[in-house]
Image 1: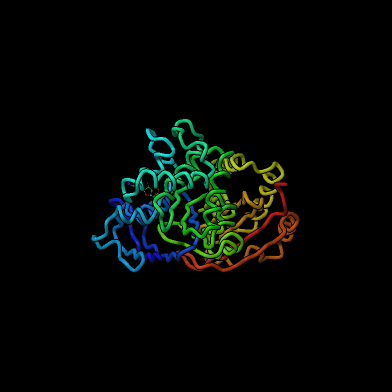
Image 2 (image 1 turned 135 degrees about the vertical axis):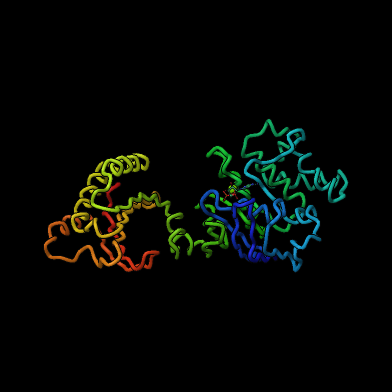
Length: 365
Ligand code: ADP
Ligand code: MG
């Protein structure tokens, strides 16, 4: 239905979309996830020409839409969009919001538009509020009215841009239920969302966007349970990194300590986790010389699984943390509190380096 190739969008010097490629088939429900500021909204806005892409191609039903001949408002009738901030006409009743498009743009009579409008309002649970003004509605009701308004134009696809992120937590599920119902009816949809469990059960495909490209895509199971690439893994497991780079044995201890304490309190690491990670890193740093090149240290805490790990990227040339027999005491210290210890070679900008990964036993429980 839609083929997107090498799509690019820059705002002046800022390149937001670098090279986005995606095909959307009829009936697909595609969730788009990824960190803030990576161009998810820009991508949706480019699709229905609310933004003019700076390069690439979008073919819809066999027709190129970026060649300048396409009527943008006709295109937007095919592609409904639901925004975070509802965008209802505040001076019109709910029913008028739902009727205005069909009457003004599709040439329907008021009676036809009202009949269809009431049907749609029933579908989203808003029939009783047909005569209400938007100001009298809760956020969840506003968003359901906005979905009904979108449907009134008979779109072929609906683009949702974080439809629940402006809502009170109590109202999120009523809106998600409506979107789920649309999915069951076979509506084609692209949904930018931070609701991971929703994305998982509603989508046919999940797209992870990062750094202006589609970094990884797959079935919900692939993306959420077995992400193949690093950034996807960090995102879906809500991994919070603490990174410190040692350039010499005279590193700034005060700076490191302050940053570490900050991290621990920000993510509520348990007291036990704080003291054991400290002991392990002290042992570890007895085993690694800090004066033969950069040593990168990462603490990674998964807010999803509670897993806490410590990774150290050794300086080029150093092959293992656990080389000499003389260090048996430190190694034992580490084995006592870690359930797995792995080392693997990795290609980096400054050559091959060994990454040592220690996973702590459940410290946060
Ligand atoms: P996301 O939806 O993934 O959070 P956005 O698409 O909103 O990301 O934004 C991506 C980047 O593009 C951000 O750095 C944002 O500041 C920038 N951006 C978005 N819209 C505009 C605009 N109209 N003018 C200039 N910069 C913009
Ligand atoms: Mg956005």
